[in-house]
Image (cartoon, rainbow, N blue to C red):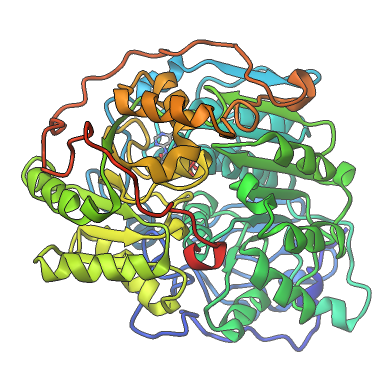
Length: 603
Ligand SMILES: Nc1ncnc2c1ncn2[C@@H]1O[C@H](COP(=O)(O)OP(=O)(O)OP(=O)(O)O)[C@@H](O)[C@H]1O
């Protein structure tokens, strides 16, 4: 049967040549806040070829990279024609843009500990769990995807990828929990793209009316919490969708909505979106979700926590998305509290729960240092650390987390006044300023970035060698995600945290995290934890040590695989713990105010 994408079946539709849709001209080069380049630049954006006779009856063509009378050529865009996938021709320029050259510092490469991922215990629960793959081969993967994976210089799958590929190929839903930096993005992109290449676009939905025909009808939807993260996922999707019929589009708030609507009009098969902007576009009638075969929630626990739940429910349950049994739903995060797992089951159908390592654990690739520092000594301690590590980490980037947006500005100004090349990122800065700050950090021009939690999740910036928790978060899961900005893809990194009695609520959880990852637990932490246990500390046991809650039931710590999987690496070049005068954790007195703050201040 001839498939005519509903939004393109009007004979009068002529795609506009917008090329770069970024509302801010001049920000489209390599290194926009999207990992490599602004979103939807010329090559990835406009000029799609899907016009004319390419969609004629009996031709069954879902766009066409070339050909189709009246169609336009877009490099790297293939087609689905007569029930067959027709990959586009290779394009050298685009390949260089997408994959860089070997050794290019702007692209993350796997580190010396990459092979250690194989040692990490994996637990998959649920009915009939399929056997994992061990290599990127076709079959079971689609040959085009395997080619693209090679171009990206990924030699072998990470544990989460080994399992997710057959799970999705077998039509199952998935809730996957794997350490930060261990390849979860590929964990959902690989199977979704591979299956899409094999099976083509959804064939059964003809648009019902003119209004419906004008909408974009993506096959796959990926939701993630921040603009920076959706842009990064979109860039990854561009890499692995290269030459295929799948056209990725990204939409997020804080950026010109009309440019994004234009991109949608030009064809959207894989939509990467923040919930707020997606709801806006759904209300405007620009997107229909009725063709969704794959729904992905990245950073799923964040997506389903209080800040996003209503928006997510509206998208998944309040619009025209098929119900759980008629789509495949995939959820990924490094942390999965039990309450969130329970809520998530509303969106899943007979799913497999995958945990790689212990849920919420940190990677042993990250050396964690905990220092006792009173609030009023934090600035001087920070200067001491930055000075002491200037040489040993001269080529690395340092990411400093604070709790409030105000503090992010104050601290970056302070560092600049002290002649440190710093910038900041937080939710009160304009989209343009956020993009610029991230680009300047990524490129190494400003190797110190002061950030709120907005930068805690998912961001994959090569060469972040040091994460400093200037303010410790109130929730240990946030700590796990923050320090996970270093030590990615088998590389090593250092994470330093300033702790004082103001953080007593999180200390017990922190001790568990440190012990699990075979890190040193300083005595003062144990003392604070003991003091606090007289009070009412929440403790990590009830919230985070949950594996598949269907199997292990409520809360409680579950034994399971012990610590110490995988050889502990020798983290070369680390600094010793003696920097600074601010340390001195024997004389801690009463701490200043708690680091707690309202959510409106930190995001
Ligand atoms: N199979 C692989 N081989 C080599 N490198 C890989 C592989 N899979 C992923 N990577 C690289 O590892 C890095 C981390 O991957 P990714 O961003 O997907 O991690 P993540 O698990 O989503 O982390 P987070 O929890 O912080 O979101 C990326 O730079 C990615 O390109």
